[in-house]
Length: 210
Image 1 (tube, one colour):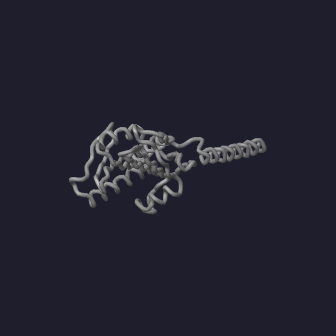
Image 2 (cartoon, one colour):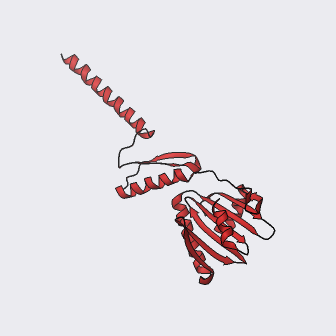
Image 3 (cartoon, rainbow, N blue to C red):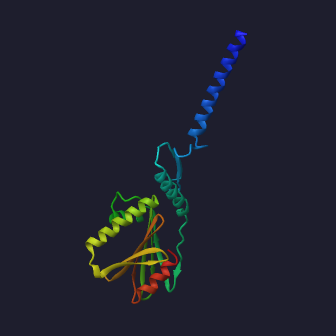
């Protein structure tokens, strides 16, 4: 009888230990998350994911999950039309060269992932589009705020302003005989500089593509 009780106790301990090991393995591998205690998120632009084992208040957890949803939706491929209206794309700068150009403007600490600079020209018009892809939507919002603060400090009020187009805030300024429009969509900041006798219709054509 005692031997039977002893064997039963040993078997129970083994089963408890096995359950602990399996539970620890599945928790660490992300197979399940304890509700309200863990937040799983993916950074698609960096091609890796992790599980944060950090306690968050309910509201903060919801905000982070919402940001994660926007991050997944923001990961789209960019397309550069060869022609916009009468303008043809002369060249497209990307990779290291584009990043170096961007860092001269934004600084080396800017959270940039990719930069693209397509150039478009016609007989009497020219357009340069800067596309700054930021690591996250949250960082893109913060960086956009920094740009607006710097523009407010350095530009005259009569040469800059903003308006809304399809729920997107479009900022504009005039400098060096160029009309500049810049705005943010998800985790990308677009800056369109154009030289045209009629800038608004030309900007709207480019806004359809970028």
